[in-house]
Image (cartoon, rainbow, N blue to C red):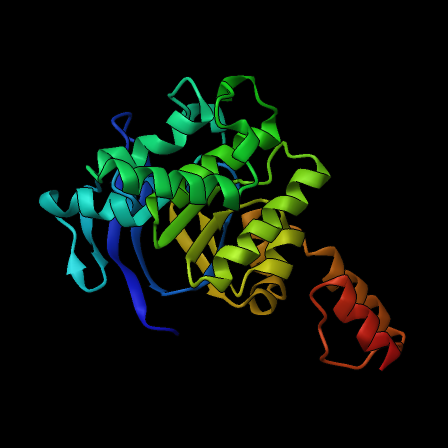
Length: 274
């Protein structure tokens, strides 16, 4: 694993209703990792994210950011470095224009006006939103709102970014745009955790998959290790990725090199040609 940036030790969280959403979760996250968090609805994925960036406070357990234990006074610092892109972009938007929306976070950091403007401009350019500066965010399309919500976090210069079901309700063009943004953020060294039900996306994008089930970690490994465990897939109500199923069919027929395990179409084509 790369140098550790976040460490979760024996984290448990229960809602006032009495529902125990997280039970004794321990997880070490390396700087720059691309991690898909998977599991059925109610498995604890969103609650885990809300604990990671300090929106919720666990009843027991500890979170360490770069070796420092997070307690009350460090929560603000944690939120500064751990950004959260919500599944529903509308729930993240509070300002009357895109520019004001993206500026809100940096302004709360009490940065200078020049620094705020610089960050807003950079974030809007990153997400190709320069022409949207004065547009009301609530009148944008779903894909455009998603881009604004990501620009919010980019302007904060968060080192760790949590995405809750980022491809949900996106059209194919917007989903492709999102994957390109994720690739760019990864190249810049950002640590990315994505909660998703999309097994095909997780298989080709993630370098590590953590599967939650009823508030506990059911599996943790690289995509191939996880998706070859039939019992894990069945218990977590996950399907095997289409690319893996195609590979297994071709391998059984002797049409592809054994143990090549392509993760995307280009790799499959090379394996077949080679």
